Amino acid sequence: MDREEERLRGVRCAAELAARDIRAVALTWVDNAGVTRVKGVPTARLAHAAAWGVGASPVFDVFLVDDATTTSAHIGGPVGDLRLHPDLDQLTPLGAQPGWAWAPADKWTQEGTPAASCQRGFARRMVARAAERGLTFSMAFEVEWFVGAPDGTPACAGSAYGMNRLIAVSDYLADLLATLDLQGVPVEQLHPEYSPGQFELSVGATDPVAAADLTVLVRQTVRAVSARHGFGASFAPVVVPDQVGNGAHLHFSAHADGRNLFAGGPGPHGTTARGEGLLASVLARVPALVAIGAPGVASQLRLVPQRWAGAYQCWGRENREAVLRFVTGPVGAREAAANAELKCVDGAANPYLVVGAVIAAALGGEAGAGAAAAGDAGWGTLPPEVTVDPATLATPPPRLPDSVAAALDALAADDVLPAALGPELYAAFVAVHRAEAALFDGRTRAEITEAVRWTY
Image 1 (cartoon, rainbow, N blue to C red):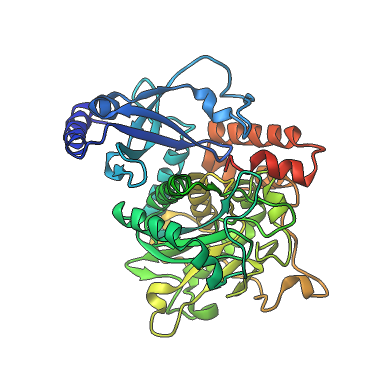
Image 2: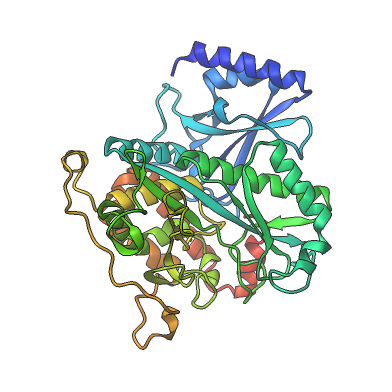
């Protein structure tokens, strides 16, 4: 890092913000519990923060969802300090919070090196690893949320996906769209979802780190606009017990030499040989990915069959009950549109860990940069496609892990993901979620739901 260069960039950015009467910048990171944390700096201090960072205790990486702390082999306790450095490329004035801007933060050590525990840094490393093999990924998270009162009463009733719901809160939704547009967020669609008070918003695909940044920005914007209208917004996996919960499904595509590897090939539904191999590698590692994409105790209340949550380890074209849904797009647009949707992701997940883990899982089936450069065709193949609701089969595909402990055991047994995360980040992540499993042990579904409803 060139501190003087960052300082000068910070000076320029601060001047632009001050000219717009923006007084402070919220620097956010997402911890291992999936909670977005923040430290704010006055606009006049932005240049200093850009060059030298803002202090943050390493203990944040072992916070639980209820703000208690645990410890791990490398992280825990009151000693030490990290520096939060804002990414000025993502600096965004906040349309629903006058006087504030936002930037995601990277964690650095006091010695000026990237912190091994930084979740955003992990996502960056996996993007770089893919680039070494001639691959780029495009990603986008779906954003599902509940809007309503503190006790879980929805802001609107009416039919699932019904126009009557949209009419009931049309001013709120129009304000949300206007605010996101002001912030430069590329919204593609917005609609009522299945559960009362539930909505979904889709944004355009971008590079993986930016996709994680974007979903953080969108969720916090939804919160701010909801508060302005007197509502609460919840992205929790389950908001009301025994109702369909909120997913944060990840769409992704892979490209090499400017070509979408999920289209125009001889494989299933047009995948190329390499594209099929990447998908097969992700599918094979889905049990471990559950620990990262659906990590909370509440996640297991959502991840059940026949609720479009993807509870079975299988794939299928446009099969919304398969954990890996393959999306070809319409004829004539498949080169641009073809992608895969990973459904075992919800609002309890850290999006930076998700994008990094999916890349690591996809690359796990490849022999390495040399073999890829040599055109090695020894990539894996997908198992037979499931074309029906897997729950209706006489012998269904394997169920995904049905507890936090089982998912963490699958992660520990995986041959790729623990090493990709690195010992510091992996140990802290596991410690947090084993402690959360103990925290909620013996609690009822209603108690779990209420405990996390407004945290995510």
